[in-house]
Length: 433
Ligand SMILES: Cc1ncc(COP(=O)(O)O)c(C=O)c1O
Image (cartoon, rainbow, N blue to C red):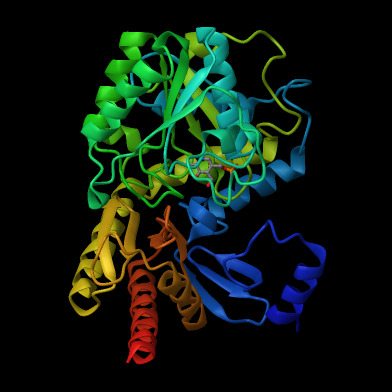
C-alpha cells in the first residue's frame, strides 16, 4: 500500500512549491461526501474540491452521462465539428440565467478562462478598456485574472506588471466596518480622481467573495452597481464561479438581489468535477466579437457538456436549492452555538450553504488568527474531516459540503469539526498558560 508520506516526498521532488496543498492527504477514491486516502482512511468532505462538487463526488447520473459519452466520442473541437450537447447545455443555461433579456453562452475550460473571455467580450462590445474590480476578490491565476484579483500575496507578487487600467474598490465587510456606502464612495472617488467612467468597460464582482472570505455583497450594493453601470454604459460582470449552481440556495447568488448581470462567469460545480466553465450573457453583447475571436481547443468538451447536462438534472430532481438552505441553516446554527464555548470563533456568516466562520484572538475582528486556522484545518483532517480556509487574512474556515450530503453525515462531519476545535483551542490555552 502506498503511504501519504511517501507520495508527499515524491510530490515535493517532482512538483513546484507554487502549487500548494492544504493537506498531505493523497486521495484514492470518493463517493458523494466521503473520500478515502491511499492508506484507506475515510474522510467526510466539507470542501468539495473548492466548491466543484455541489452534486457530490462521482454522482451516479454524472458518471453515467460521462460514461455514455466516452462510448461515443471524447473530442472533435466545437470549432471544427460541433455537437448537440454543447448547444443543449447553452440553451439550458440561457434559460436559467437571471433576468429576462435573451442570453447566449460560450463554454471554456477553467474559471480563469471564463473571466478572461468575459473581459474580452466586454471590451469588444463597449470599445472601452478599463475594468473595476474589488479588493479581496479572487478571479483566477492567469495574468489578466491576477490583475483583477484584489490580493497581492500570493497571487500577484513577483508576477507583474499587471494589466493596465484595472482599478480596485473596497468590498463591503460589515464585520470589519466596511459599508456599502464606503464602496460606493470609493467608486465615486475613482471616477473623480483616476478614471473617466466613459473609459470603463466593466465592473466585475463576486456576489459572495469566495477566496476573500465568504462575505456576501448586500443586495443594495448589487442594485446600486446595476444602476451605476446603466448610467455610464458600463457592463456588470458577475463572477458566480464559486457561488453558482445552487450553493447559496438559488441557482445563482446574484438572484438574491434581483439583479440581471450583463455577463456572468460560471465554472466549478457546473459539471460536477469535469473541467468546464462558461460565460453566459445578454445575446447582443455576447455576439460582439467576430467569428474566431472566441473559443479554445478543449473549450466545452463533449465529456464536460454531458456532465453539465446531468448536473442540471440532479439539481432539479434532488431539489438541491432547498438542500442548500437546509445545510446552511444547520451549519450556522451549530456554529453560533459553539461561539459561546469558543471565544476564538468570530463572525459566523452564510448565504445558503456557503458558510464561514472567522477565527480571531480576544474576540476581536481586528485580530485574525491565521495560525489557529491552519492548525484547525490539520486537526480536522486528522479526525477525518476535510475543511479549507480562505480570507484576506487567511483566518476563515469555509464550509462547502456537497449539497447531496445526507443529514447523518452532515452531523457526523460537524461533530468532527467540533472535536478538532476543542483540540486546537485547548492546545492554544495550554501554550499560553
Ligand atoms: C470566484 C472565482 N473566480 C474565478 C476563479 C478561478 O477559477 P479556476 O481556478 O478554475 O481558474 C475562482 C477559483 O477559485 C473563483 O473562486
